[in-house]
Length: 222
Image (cartoon, rainbow, N blue to C red; front, side):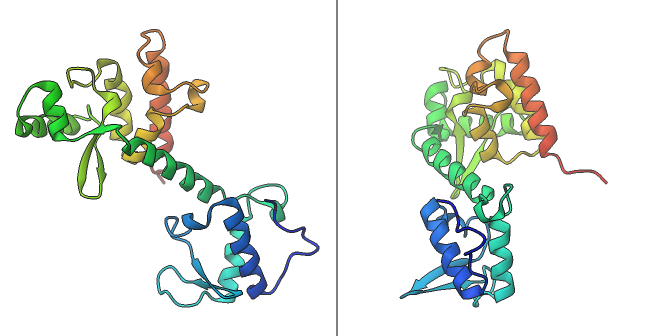
């Protein structure tokens, strides 16, 4: 829902905080404040109390006004801005939940596919990861092996080796890598990278897209 028109938008911090909270709730983004490391709030009757993310103390008025401006800063009209970072976090949260719902294997699962012991699978998995030939994702103390990258025998799909390697080498966040490889990608005209890579004629384009993503993820050298 759009924010209030500039001419009627509140300017005092208390009113701004209440309007900002309602706006985020209407957009379904209030729960993304904490994951983004931003100030959060609680409702106390008719009042909205914003808190500093580090100290837990009440958020200073000037910081609250800065937060409001920052969240509305994308777009031609600040009054109708979009909190893009919170939208991205919400999208990634939903995609993570979907991927965690059956989209991965543990060591035992890999062992079952390969017909080896769990210890042998664990050793092989980590050796492949060291060679940047296998994507691993850490989640709440567990090591997850995203299923899409393995064939029916539990081996890494050959066509993905040159796609995965540059992303791991560039230290792209493993979750971001997993999401990119399994979601429609703008760089590939909306195709899903790991699916498109099955076509030998298209695999080079997927590889180049992965390299481009890896280059954007590398820290800027000064």
